[in-house]
Amino acid sequence: MSYTVIVCDMFHYADPEHEIEVPGFPTGEAAIEYARRRVRSSLEALRKPGQTPEELRHLWYTFGEDCRVVGPEGVVYRASEELERFIRHPATPEACDYIALYESLLPGDFALRCEWAAGTVPPPYHYEYHIVLRPYEPPPDAGEALYPRMQGEITFWPDYPGADVPAWQETFSVGTHACLRVYALLEDGGLLRPEIPQQETDAAIGGETATLEVTANGRTGCIRSTDLPPEQRAFLLETVMPAVRQTVPGPVWERLEARRQAYHQGREPRIL
Image (cartoon, rainbow, N blue to C red; front, side):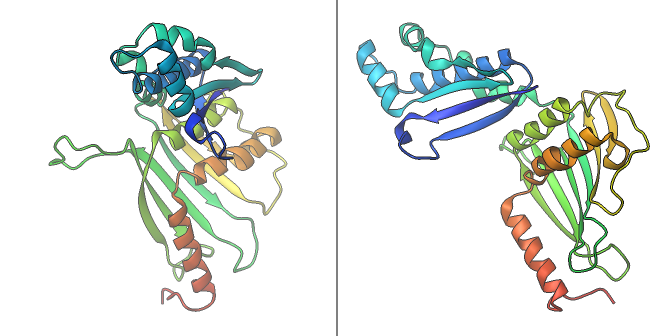
């Protein structure tokens, strides 16, 4: 099972949303190292020449970040328990680089193609979409500009695909956070194992379906919801698929849903 780091913004401690989750760590050790680096980074940003430990401690409790690591067994680490050591021993830039550590957790060749279809229902309730995630390829003249780690594309059909049904496409950037969550869930569910069973199942006829083609660590595999045992099928559709959908920005979904409603109300042109 994967581990999650909970980051607490000390300055906004009274805000109900003062904590954020950073998911996708394959081991407790990786999550703990991330938590250490992130807290040390916030502490070193507040350190100034001539400060006393008391002054630095006060600044951290006011403006810093604290982290705890949560796994299947509960909370396994709290970075604040090492605060006095962090204060006494300044950290190098490498020891504060939590971003590089997090980026390294996602395989460099990670890519995903998802094909999802709603259940067998009459219009306007049926729709389908394909989501493709792949490493970002900057243009040849990109220079040293910073680009997102991943890029995505969604193709959306507002009805059963056919010659008279439009297919709408949008592209978007994808951060490591969203992709790593999908990757970690696939690992947690045992869906990336080469020996994953493919079998005839009692999948409900007419229900939603999903097919994922995943590339990671030099291997590509295909996962079909209709071929999975019931428990894994439920995990794919109810846990993995929401994370896949979240890789697509909210405004993109809003535009597609608005177009779908317009299409079924006759305000979006059909293909003739």
